[in-house]
Length: 274
Length: 279
Image (cartoon, rainbow over all chains, first blue to last red; front, top):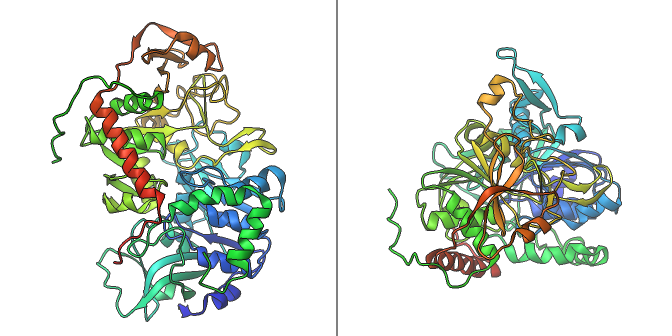
């Protein structure tokens, strides 16, 4: 049952060194405030999962939180490379980062399989691609009915998933609107979950088919207004595209990056970071 | 269902850049009513130009889950709020890939790439060796399955020897394989659900299509003012031309002005901190 905690307490209690952690969000609803709290609490040796690692994972990798990354597209959308991710992969700085890469279709299926309690996801995928040659987790099975050879990958089952959402009601039920990505699947696939929300309301006023996570499917909720910025929260604030462009310059240089993190993440109070 | 396209000046544009030529030509490749799975960047620009000019009923799908979207400005990212606000419906990402793409609902997959080779294989993963890459690129994203699950694929990429290579270092997304034959020997069930692959490559110099027999990309149309030598110099393999390459028609004044207005709107939109009104 969802417990309302401070962001500091939610991360301290649910995200541990060495955990497999997913901070999901498909451009929208990226849980920056929670990720920054993980960085401030100096978590180490994390296996990070996310379909589209962008600035937040660049920050976590650059600050040395991660030893492994499972992903399907790692870039700064519409801008270019993630320089901290590239530095870790190409130059092993600040530490060697093991990568395991998939396609979006496969990762989306792996999330769905995790939520469904299955050991694997099956898809008609990776045909003719070199990805199966470099990722031992991409294998094949023969369909028992048609004999067709299909791609199979393990289900995603993280220790903890962290997402951001619009709102929770006082009982701890959560409403997610707009580009919902894999938010619901990622929470249901995880052993534990932390959800940050813009606000707590008396009633979600959700229509019957809305994307709602019941309180009893969530471990902890923390109120974090603006918690997805510089990404966005549909209905609350827009994406700071200008910052995504500026990040290219900030992250390109190791020292500039470090200084920016000190000024904007490490030395600020929870919930007021950029 | 949609508004009639406005009456417009269809005379040839007086001046345009090579990139505008590429975008307009790519937009013309989309016929009205096509269901198109759109990659971010150049394909998104061309697909929206098509929607704003000759193909108002083109259905645009972005991998973030936005179904039949009609953005007023071009998205910077694949999941901009604009795509959701202007979509018929927004579905989850697993539904997008499983039901709409793998389910066979997409006519054209419209992709960009970092590298393309002789057999139209696409590389967006890395340059160099996988374990010790010289340049690490973002990776596959939606492209590996867009390339095989769409009925056909259009590729947009600027012509240069670094981009047009004899053989890609890494096949992220299948064109026709390293020998041009990779789509020939699929299991019948797989073949039934797999598209024709890249049928058109649009560059800033020319159009290329796969040879019907070998699947090697050959030049079928040359843009105005471009010489064969320019194309040969910008292609990393001994590129062939069809017997009588066409002359790509020039863009119209209306197409160029529509594209410029779209880009100016986009620039204004993305230049500042865009505040969304409260729900």
